[in-house]
Image 1 (tube, chains in turn cyan, orange):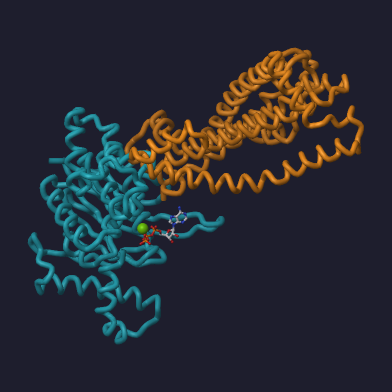
Image 2 (cartoon, chains in turn blue, cyan):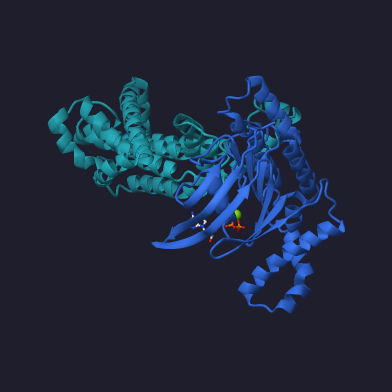
Length: 279
Length: 285
Ligand SMILES: Nc1ncnc2c1ncn2[C@@H]1O[C@H](COP(=O)(O)OP(=O)(O)OP(=O)(O)O)[C@@H](O)[C@H]1O
Ligand SMILES: [Mg+2]
């Protein structure tokens, strides 16, 4: 079992320079994540979710505030922290199997034999056994995304960040991989942070759901999901929490669109469908 | 198609390698018909040439008839002179491409990978690349004399410029996304270079190499016309002095045929390489 880590984000601020002007992207983000916790992040497009993950993974060091992992400041990347990017980012000149092996290139914990086994297991996990020798251009978007998930998992990181990993998948594969992700999370005790546009997925997988709002990106509310696992998506409690998250969401949307409260509640259902099936 | 080849063709059709071959040939014949359109002008010029000779528009000393040129080409080939001059020219190309592209790659890589190198070298390089090769020759003669060194140096300069530019551009255009992946998996500098930079930039590297060879071929003729006692360019210059214009025409034809052959084979290799690497920049988002 991986030794899971405590992640502390304190008063995090991040700006990007756009044509000489400083554009605030994240404002005053504070969040403490326990070892082995599963945190879902939802929020409208452009509210800084990917940027937040980029800071946690260690690809950006230009920020204010503190990012602590087990009490020490995050500097640069580490094999203990894995990420599935929003885009698959596979190397086009490598096969599926080689792309997944890349995750283990600098892993010193595993023997060669263990590495080989881990790669095979993960190829099977994401259901691409028949495509082990295929190149990315021969894969569909969803298949590529599954390769990227396998690449991030082979290392068995302590902390795994997922940026809309199931966005490009069909409903069946998505439900299957959600289940698998949950199984790996329970078995390995990995701390997971998943960004998603699918509110149901956020509630299904998360111990907490962080709702962000845009311009600048802030945490609007954090909603606990105190339900035992396996969760039942059609139970009354589950639906109630989902509605609660959606309400936060539609408030944000109203605020920017200037809609009145009433119209929003009428639209809630269509809104929720749109969110769940957004690719 | 003669009778001897017919059974072979039948064998191919019946064996199953096949359809693919015919698809390829189909594509080929479409290209050939495009090429055929391109042949109209040269054939027209050839006809006009023949016509002009027959009607003696221009003195035979100045415009030799096509048959004479063809005859001289054969004589030159049979005597071994053409092979000799060609091998001299081709070995000059070989050395210059080797030296020029090594320098170009070194320069391109340093400028692309190091900010310091870029700051120091690139501005001078940009000025340097504005001079045509002939512009360097007087200066090179002072330092190198007019021996083999001069020719190799001048032709190498022609190679360095396109190779450097393509290498630099190719490396700076590598998708940032992939470099971030390399960072996440803690690639060392040499892993980044070998596993990301090189494969991603390979198509540009090759295309720079190809341009370098073509530039070398152009520069070669120039340099040999100017100062040489061997080589295809020399052959033409010498023949012109002796008013053997049939030989000048032979030179033009040889240079053209080799140039076109080089270009076609390199562009074929380039397209193979690109499909082998699965068009890096198109796929990697
Ligand atoms: N490298 C960059 N330079 C300048 N601005 C950037 C950069 N990266 C992101 N931004 C800006 O930061 C904001 C947040 O971007 P980010 O990608 O984090 O959003 P997101 O919440 O992940 O959105 P989505 O749900 O669409 O993926 C956007 O306004 C974007 O324009
Ligand atoms: Mg994003």
